[in-house]
Length: 260
Length: 198
Image 1 (cartoon, chains in turn blue, green):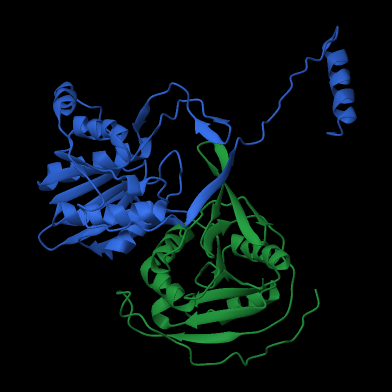
Image 2 (image 1 turned 135 degrees about the horizontal axis):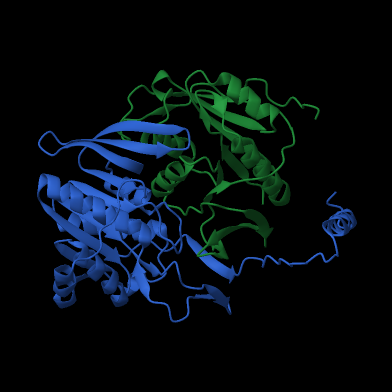
């Protein structure tokens, strides 16, 4: 099995996000492997452990994104590749998907591609859909369990977690799979894995190298970013000598606020 | 600028999914501001009643695509059908029903355009629509350069308008998108131009 897992580097979910002068800032918080992608990496590793093969982590971004790939390597991925090109700066999900599809084809004869359900930053949740469409491969989204996988026959059965219920879907390979958090419990990187990852030289592929001449210009852009309206809550203590008095004052207060 | 705003009506075996009508309402608001019309799209098998319901809920026209092979929703063939119908579309709204995210994503590739999911507000600015969506726990407002947009919408009212209908027949071959064909057999003749009172 030749498995690819697509990952993204995002701000830590524990970071305090602010908007200053129309720019999103996460302060001094470190950038991490997108938490949703950890489930994808874990599932890719489990699939490899069961069926053999290699797992290649692919990310698109600036050189900084190497850190996210190192985390994927530390978890146990065999290879990691960074797709980075000045032409891809400001790419929207459509352009990212186009580049990822080219990168997946450049990896070689890939059987299965894993994605997390969305990124925690832009959170569009359509990149894997668009990648699958570019590749013209079957798409299996919201996968909560890998039921059956037969690399010889080239078939895959998964359970999808939908709003209407659970759905069992059978597909041919190669396929693109996006996973939910119900699918597994991601492992922690091992000490050996971290050591191996820290020494790893991660190859960088340019747009030209993956056969992408002139990535498509972004169709969606952000003219404005603003913080969501602040939710103000005030706390007021009702004082009184007895419980009865407190109750009466509370009732009066609630009537005053037109709640009762 | 007069624009035709398309709305995909999502349903499970003919039962409409609630936010479809909300998307129709959002489309109307946009159409009013842009000076356009609203066209609903209903795909499936034996979903004629749903097309009627879309007219009752205020669509000025309905594009109805029916075929036995379309009875069960599957993203790939549905996206191919939409791509064939919407080759020249300007704006397409989707209700956010979970699976429409995949559908809109695939359609955006076929039409080489942008997709904006989770839209919470739609406005018109300088004659162009503009959408707001939440992101990174801060709200962001992306705007598109291309004349098209895809988005999932929510929470708007509906207002009945004129009636009109188009029937589109879908080909039998299904799984591969290249094998999928749409034939426009009937014209825009059925019950067009009747005004319904609110």
